[in-house]
Length: 184
Image (cartoon, rainbow, N blue to C red):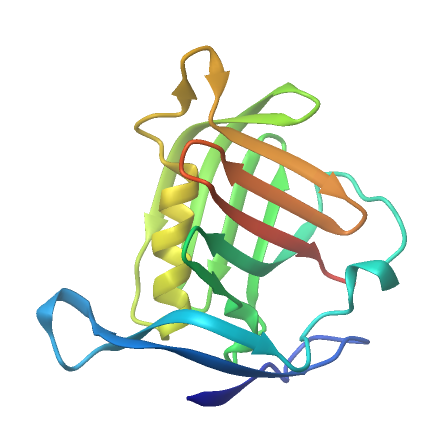
């Protein structure tokens, strides 16, 4: 199967079209045939919504506004902002994380334990009706931020890394991550 995913609003100076050739299986949410999801097994990105990481220069603090670039789990890689909504964003300010995907949003508090580790303390999530990518966003965000088990022994499970315009949140025990891109 192949399909085109586009984001045409409010993104300035970046590529706005992404074409993905992918193979996978159709799945249905909650045993319903009304909501189709696609479990992607393999894909080839022909174009990208955002510039290649090698084209981006600069260093930015955590306290800025970020866009979700992609979400990765052991079996899935999805690109929410390319599905027609450009208002998918993520930001942090004064030890608060927040983000939205169309009508959906999340909010959490955190503390920085060292240069590469972030501790999630509280998490609230609003689940509204949205696209398949939004459903993936909500599911994978919860998986990465798993507030029930934030520590693995003495090691924090949630870590973050800032590299140029990119912020990566990773749940080391689940091998899942969310990569965020600073809006230009």
